[in-house]
Image (tube, rainbow, N blue to C red; front, side, top):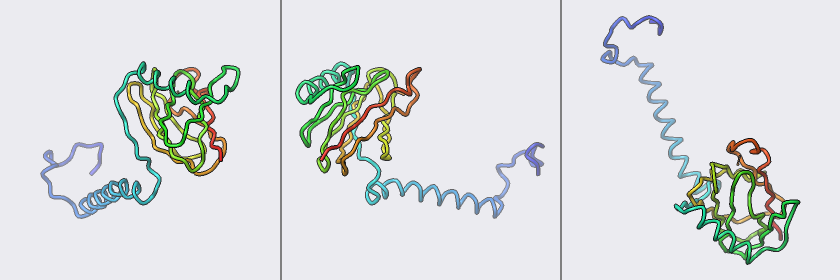
Amino acid sequence: MSAILPPAERVWWKEPLDRVELLWIVIALVWCLIMFFMMPYWHVYGQQNLANEAYKTSPEAFAKKADEVIAKYKVREEGPQKIPVVKPPAGSDVYLVARLWSWQPILELEAGKSYRIHLMSMDWLHGFSLQPENINIEVHPGYDHVLTVTPTAPGKFSIICNEYCGINHHTMISPLYVVK
Ligand code: CUA
């Protein structure tokens, strides 16, 4: 039977299943289940998927908290735009503000210490992509997205916006420092 012509039997859905058809349905179902259970499995044993939390909040409330952290833990400024570099104490809450087209502040974290990084957008959808690590998070306006992270090695990392957010999307890059 061709897919172009109408079926010989008009009420085709009442036809008995062919064995090959059934086999494919079973294969597809089993594969779906494997993929489904890989998600929790990978989370627990793969040490790869992040454990995230998200809370509803307003841009004003989030910006206020971010400003408080910047005022408290700023160590220097960088670049022509004088973006503050913040070195928060281990275990503390750190706020990273995404907006058209920048990340603020620049974070300086210590290797081997844990931090709670809060992400939020002030305007549109942005993407938090940590390079060269495999970490990708959507950054939404109105949601405080919390990642608990422990940087393992010192170095200079890059935060890149990976959701297209307009004409200067490609410039939405920020360093992230991990020191010893
Ligand atoms: Cu922000 Cu693309």
